[in-house]
Image 1 (cartoon, rainbow, N blue to C red):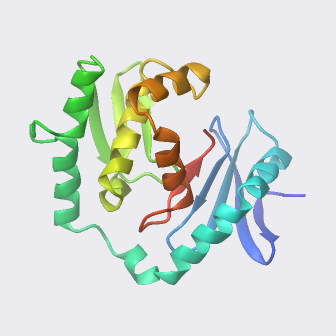
Image 2 (cartoon, one colour):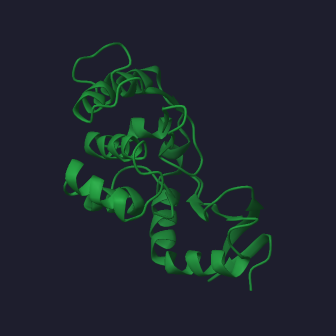
Length: 198
């Protein structure tokens, strides 16, 4: 049974912590370290362990990929990478930027957004403030996966959880989104991704 601190599965150390969060979060760091965060109020350590075990193949595969390219994973973002992500999102008024294009398409005016380094999520949406935050790591994933995250967060303005209403909107807005989510979750690209319960 898991306790907070370091636990082991198949010889792989798992850092387990309790946090003031609403969902169990699982992430693999660029150096291959495995972190499991379990909410104080919303889940037990046993539930956190069960979630981890249900994702064990993803953990092993993603950890292996991270350890195979440690130098690349530790390389800081270049100014060019950051500039490319900002341009892709439309930070400087690019007419084909993903944020303004999707804001217009979904009729969601007045949405503000920012990018920052995030440890366990690709993006977040504060629907009350109409603020979308995107992970700077998106600079290293393909355009179609960045677009998936953008649409995902815009959809949270209407559907605040990942229930049936959210999924129905995503089906209408971005057919094929489940395959994109799977690629993002399984690391089917050149960086080891964070993963959340969807």
